[in-house]
Length: 342
Image (cartoon, rainbow, N blue to C red; front, side):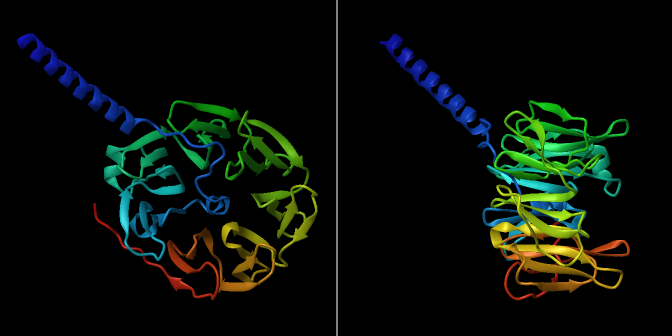
């Protein structure tokens, strides 16, 4: 009888241990992404990815806290500090945040406690952080189960690489200076800035690269069957081209320096420079209609979200953050996010 009880106790203990092991394996199992998913919009990433909308929140680099990673609700309230790194190129999917970190000597704790540069993955739920790449990079985009990035070193300068989201692969794709920002349906689009400015495409299924269209393209962004771009052969006018017919449509009379295509919200914001005395931030519809001057002057780092569009003005050594409703009536106000002490 005693032997039977002992056996039952051992079975119960083994079952409990097995259950605990299964629980922790499930909890710690890494969840991979669907092919072709993207962690932020191309337009936001062209503007350094300082804002990224995910679910009911907006994740952003807080300029009042040395670019630390924060989140807030879509109205711009209820701030929460997530990580102390100087953050850019924010991409989010499956509750995982991927970002470029570029810390400096402004914070002594960062100098002595953590790696200064690289790419990091942060779990939205538990705050666990993992370094995916330790080194300097210029820009990046999450596409499927890889983060494609432009790597920099002092000897070879720029090259195109990718790292798997679990950190197990980090490989060279090309020694050419390609800018991996514009992703659409499992493909990356960029221009051959070294030689031709032709429109190129990288197929993420095999990382093959080819020329699509010859021309003088800058900042290509593919959305809803069109490639939007700044036409360097036509006084930098913003243009779109049908991906099927190759027919083009000029969208602006302005000379465009930078833009952000908010295709989901039917708008484009761009910085225009028409001579020395006509600089302004403008909003139009994706078909070029509905011209609205948002603000006179020079602005940069445009971040489009559902509720608001954010943009910076550089005044001396200071960057001032403004916002206006993404659609509807223009109402520009200065935006001062709270700082949360560690």
